[in-house]
Image 1 (cartoon, chains in turn brown, orange):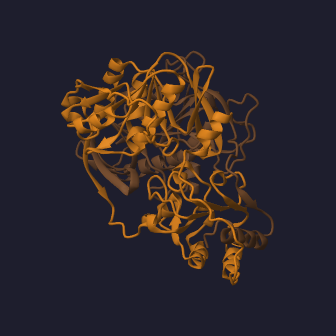
Image 2: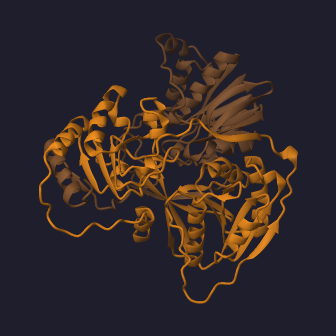
Image 3: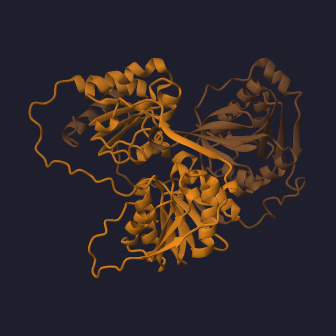
Length: 261
Length: 356
């Protein structure tokens, strides 16, 4: 099975964020980046399928030069090769813009299965995966917890609300968006890291793919007016400082103000 | 300029978030000086459409087809594309359910659009609609505008809008026209085969019945630290809950998970310990009467919904709290009025945005 895993690189989970002076995006200068968490599970799912059924795992990412680091990490964990669509200004790319770039890179690859995380931890639109399926003409399922290979297709377990699940079957090729936290993530081994250095990372640009870059692309249908830190509108009584005193104050409030305990 | 709310049903039962979307559609229509309509998809949905007709709408579209009986993203996308061509709405609104998350991006992409997904509030700026949504797991807000030609698409976060009480406000409204629409779908269009719905195991724990819930999140760092929280649970006579990562890691069983994929709760007190407050968690607990948050990060989104908070290291705060709870209660309490039970109103964000 030829599996492509689309990976986004996002600011590390605990980053201190600040708003850029444009107020259109965050300040990127001093951030450290990591693989978007749900995409890490998509990669893990891809690697497990390859181990069980053979084939190849290709890591695919779009964004500026720093994205190469995320792709190297995927290679170190066991992906066979990577494709980096090098584009500056990734923060301004909307999900459809990203899906168009990924689709253009995938047309010549003709994978059996395309995997990606259900959403990104930065923009959080949760749309790129299903959009990519539409652009590639592939059947898809989202919020997938488990993938099982059948003759000529797959059966996947999808998560629904309130603890419900559903199995869905579909032929290959197909696209799945993978839920976070569905299995244990592997670490890159020293050997894996060493091997990754010799694996192929193909760098392409939007122009190489015959797609207009962010400047020449079709006008976005949604524009970012501004981004901001949410105003704190609920009056929260915060107790800081010495834990014992804070705890005592909280207990008093719960007893005599909220009257809960 | 009309607004179309797409309702969600499964087997003739509404997803109750649909009525939040319906209320939002009517509110936006008022503010943008246009009309609101609604659509429901499925098979044999006459009674559902009739129910909608009484909801002060311009029109109700009953989109019926045998291939819409069981949800598939292919059939829903095809049907909704045809409906949008017919109804020509300015804006199509959806509840941000798991089903909508599955098909809306496909529908939007097929029309060259991006949906404003998981929106939490709106305002009208010089006649133009601005929708607010959250980035970085709720840590950053974003105001979005639509550009280019209609139709535009948006989905609304659970609890962001309150379903209307259609109280008396003057003249009775005439029932909306129900327009039956049979989309053209062929069996070969549908590539996925949905099987039955199931639950992993019978849920034995109903967190919804608990008066006090103490929930634990990533901040606990490892499974071996959970007994620390259990002591607090015991001291409060509470039930133990958890955020998703804790259950995914197997540190607590799934039945203790609070949030969009776990249980939705509204106890008298919800204490979130080491939980940053991702949207998926907040939707499961923000209707709680009193919310207490204990977290190291003063900017954690959980403080946005908390009545009381302690900013600090849970490994110090929780034992201190257990100790404080074990001190004898005062014999006489200061007199004071009972606190009123707050109704789970619209998210605070919907108010904050109109104030911007």
